[in-house]
Image (cartoon, rainbow, N blue to C red; front, side, top):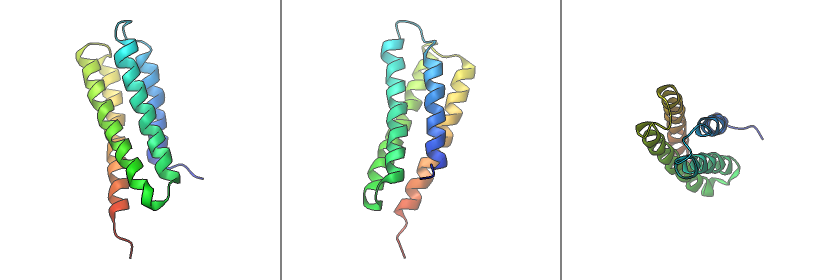
Length: 116
């Protein structure tokens, strides 16, 4: 099965998040770092499940992915405010999550269209 662009982008974002959280301060790594990593994995896996799910179950996975990407955005902002991530890392991850959010929104919009 061919992977969708949104899944491929979320996979790459997950790799970037893991690379960025490696350098978090020791005090924030087990809490904030882990939360961001878990949210990125949840988003990626929800998108994978949406790819393979039957039409009637797909929307639940897409909503889960959307919630996860919102969580990632909030946690990245908190990481920046706590200076756990530099401006370049923040900009890169913000851009990735913004693009993934748009793609998820488009996927949801497509799935909500009535079948003719």
